Image 1 (tube, rainbow, N blue to C red):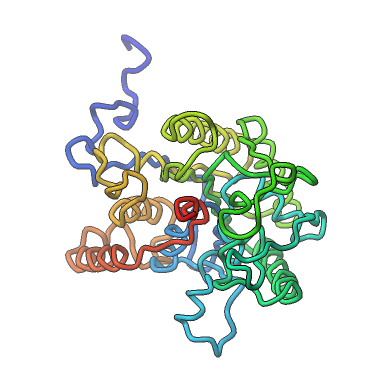
Image 2 (cartoon, rainbow, N blue to C red; image 1 turned 180 degrees about the vertical axis):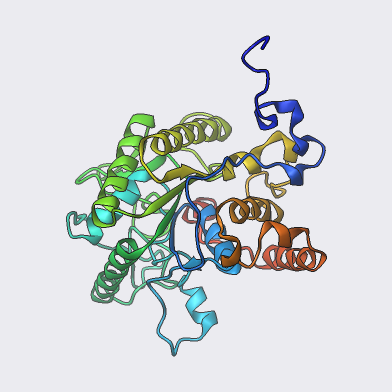
Length: 361
């Protein structure tokens, strides 16, 4: 043995990866510590990218558990417009680890923010400051909002207490915080409802120490109520839409993703049955040569989502428990199905993204 790198697996050498010649062959996923069956209840949460993950899981035969569902008499199109089924409950985007932590505290009655409601942008009705775009047109009154919130929290408790697998996508480090009690909003007051008051709302960029502490607290909170849950962490490859830091948004994006990636890695190394899945690396890899980003160099294309989720299915799914297996993908009929799926995704890939509203105001 001439040096310690002799005999290491091919995947540990950059130039030996087949993805260099054919990006579709890139597979940086290590053997996961657990598998997922068709019966396992999967709960998803996180940033905008997590919505793609949830949608694909459902289409791939996984049991994406939706605890908060629309009334049976409501047409599917109306339910979709009101964001039912987007995540396992109608909590909207949870961009930061602090948001996840506070959602848990609020759902179990351990934290009640002072910001109970915001006025709608047009002045008619109210919206939830922590789910500003979840209800198109807003709520008629604060009373209606509070009733919906109670039902929502009950569904959050049900989802987290009964799930088998929790998939959380870390998205951002920048946030707006209520100075009065530390409540974190998914978007700055005034962008979509409410009004901006610098004496009340403050900008905060969570660093790696704060983010890890929040994620660790959230995992501990969940595991206390659901000890056997398996956890999959991902980092969104979607760049920041805007930054409040006095610098180019590209620099803020690089810093934010570095923090989130570090935190996800640390959590995966610290907690049992907790693993990191490299969706961020698959989309942003030089192997893809930018092909997985749309023309705005920010949004992820359907082909990129398909590559990520194809590897997810290959590595995590029990073969008998999902519609798309590694063997099926090589089959001609399955390839046609994948192409049709990609076309449909290109036509319908719209996600609820609070951060995108910044450009509209």
